Length: 291
Image (cartoon, rainbow, N blue to C red; front, side, top):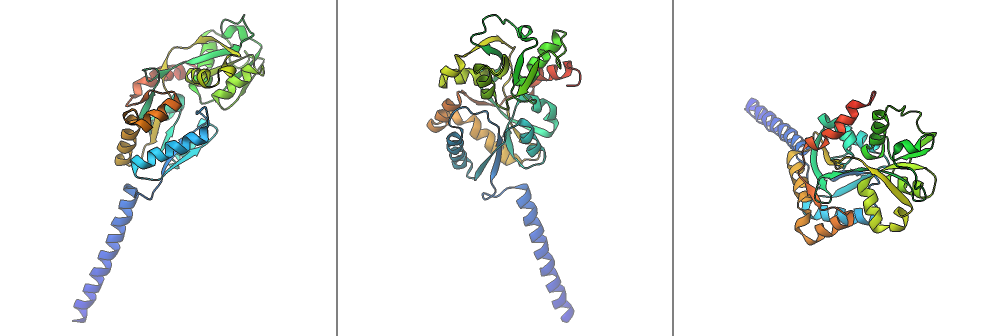
């Protein structure tokens, strides 16, 4: 009798432990409503950034039925490190780091700008400079880049110099990083730099919301079109959460609040996108010795 009771107790205990293990595994694989969705962003937003993120957070939380936390950092590199260390679930990054780390990321959505999932890099100079006609006119001058992991704000002008047979490490008298596209425009407008490379979407949007600033710069040339900076997910994100986030982003044009948020971003919406959109950036990376 004692043996039967002992066995019964052992069985109950074992089943309890098994139940707890299964519950723990389920919690890891399938986040609960209390687990926040962590989204990384850089300083890509242009006007009243904090207020916009608050409104976007409320919109996403309502539709995902989950708490949303935006984690903002100054550089793409910081955001990428957090993604790769699984400290973020999703992030809005540049196409350049996406190309470098695409095997460890999942393409979630690509913004649609002026009817296409594409954008350009702009070479800008002060409005008072009426002579410069290309990047060659900036030899031995001061140049402003946005971020060393930016396609439009760094990789494109580096490729242009390489393609022209120039020494890209010594072409400018001095160069510096501003760590934000808007700050590139400000540096050129204020005469702190003789030229700069900027995301064309950012310059165009600034021209709408702050024309006094962009009027003090001149667009010298525009690059070919590249895949727009994408929204990505870390590779191990839960599939159901991935699908929910994709559905919410791509569905933003379908309701009044979503359309209003997109208008503040100066975007048409978010599309499914595909990795082939970023082949042009990959070609630049492969063409430049040492990356």
